[in-house]
Length: 69
Image (cartoon, rainbow, N blue to C red):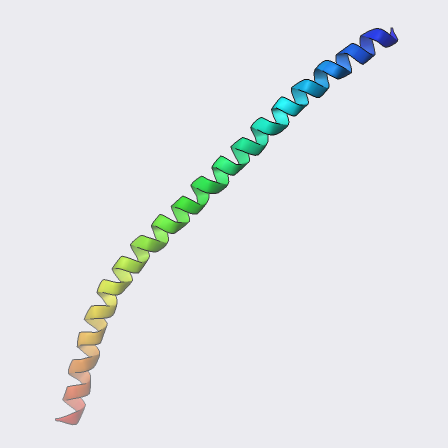
């Protein structure tokens, strides 16, 4: 009876190690995917913000000149 328990725990241990590593790899791939999404979203936001900022600058300059004329 004890031999069966020992052999089953050894099998479970090796399975759990494989499962643990697959979980770790899966977790890191999720983290990397999440960050790449954040970076791409931020980059898109930056490019649209830059365009928006340029139009805001033009508007502010026209207001500034409007005040000083």
